[in-house]
Image (cartoon, rainbow over all chains, first blue to last red; front, top):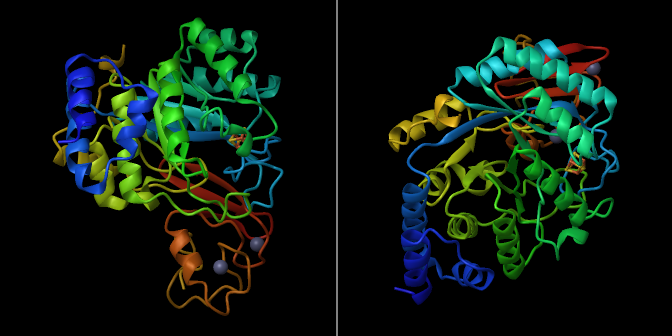
Length: 331
Length: 74
Ligand code: SF4
Ligand SMILES: [Zn+2]
Ligand SMILES: [Zn+2]
């Protein structure tokens, strides 16, 4: 057995402490023949430190497209020739989407807006929307609205938003190759305010944006330093019209290695499958990831693209004897 | 070719619409890659007039609206 797996077993599985950046890099460099053993270890870590439950979430876009930022992977930037048009979701449709999400058994519903940060119109929509959802549906509401001011953080807490998503997207050293209209540090400062407010921090990113293996390890270590409650892991789905439209898709085995590495870096976090798994991993890989460190999924569609039907994931979880985390377990 | 797959319009005998709803180019010619992409994406262009549609994706479906030709669902 490779030495690094022995060390990881002792430190992460037995001790509950995450690997450091150099060790994560060793994991990412393991050859294919060690992958089954690596995934098994990551799964054991997840079962020991998080348990068998899987957190299920639905996401919806309250404001789609027309964003002034230039995140090179994003079809919602107004700066690229993407076919995605700007559109707002009305409140009744938002509530309906929350109801449909809850009907799948999901405990989380995340409201997302394609903005640099919220303006008053968006905050007003949020207040009205969150209130309407809470009156109609039993589900936890999360939000992802870009960079926040302290006042906006306080407002979201007041509305009853329990978790805030703000992805660092990639490691600090690669960020300027991905986004030029704002900085990694600006994102970090929103995350710090969210943490201090008592809201749960949800922060992840996208793999396959031209980062090196070393930078993938750097990213996992930086996330571990932030210690988010949840880490959504996306794999680049190259979008037409964006600067990253021609990037190759991450290889399935590299995606699985990364899932295991992120789990060994953050033994206790909610590690969520987010976008791109359908094209990177397919059905078989989705299963392998759930047996290799993943303990949360986004069900159904994403913000601008479609996912597997919710029933396919729920059947898979049943098959794997992994119970869906119930709403009561989240309080 | 599944030009308006998932729409509420009648399938089968209906004539093939003139434009690809994924790339907006004339439907004549090969759009196999578009059809594959459409399995994991909603339509973006109106297949009748090639206007960019306003598309709203929600967890369990999508709607796509052309100002001229109305709303399709999936
Ligand atoms: S800020 Fe968000 S919506 Fe705007 S371009 Fe970046 S990722 Fe896309
Ligand atoms: Zn086409
Ligand atoms: Zn039309």
